[in-house]
Amino acid sequence: MIYDLIKNTRSIRSFGDKKITKEEIMEIMKCVRLSAASRNLQGIKYITVIQEESLKKVFPLTHWAGLLEWNPSESESPSAYILMCSDKNLPLPEKSLYCDIGIAAQNIMLKATEMGYGGCMIGAFDKNKVKEAMNIADDFQVELIIALGESAEKIKIIDAKNGKINYFRDENNVHYVPKRPLNELIIDEK
Image (cartoon, rainbow, N blue to C red; front, top):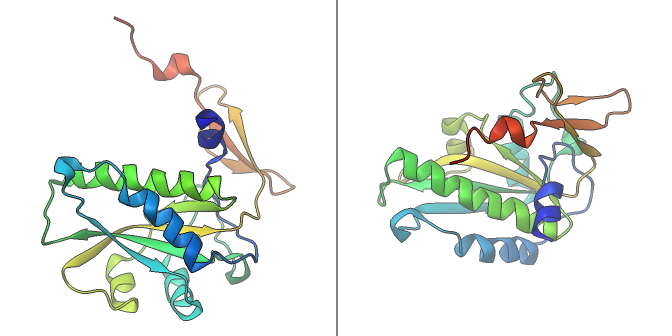
């Protein structure tokens, strides 16, 4: 069961029309609240974005699919974002901060997938412009954006061949994600 959930949790970059409700976002946030955290500091803070005006402010400040010459159009944009912020009043060493962000982000993605939605972790954005557009207090810095919505993509995981791991799309716009075999990931047994 968890294997299938992980396998089906992919980066979605093109979204359909179905809107995520505030109640559904809160279901996702309930899972985030339970995430493991360094020193149990729980230093990551969140801004949920579902209002149309706010969505339109964030979307043009994001950059998608670094390996493709493509960004989603406005009609393919997500119906929600979760902005993951560091809190200057709860300082964490950078390594711990990014570990905590990764754990919480994966929990967001897994829960969204379980609920029938898709998501994409976005690290390519201008932190200062997002902070300004969303009027975020100086105590917080946006570290990661997670886009959420109804998936409008078909994604296939395939075995990587000859070390080629770059994702790609075919002529039917199917998104392929090559994964290394286990024997390339496990470097030793002791």
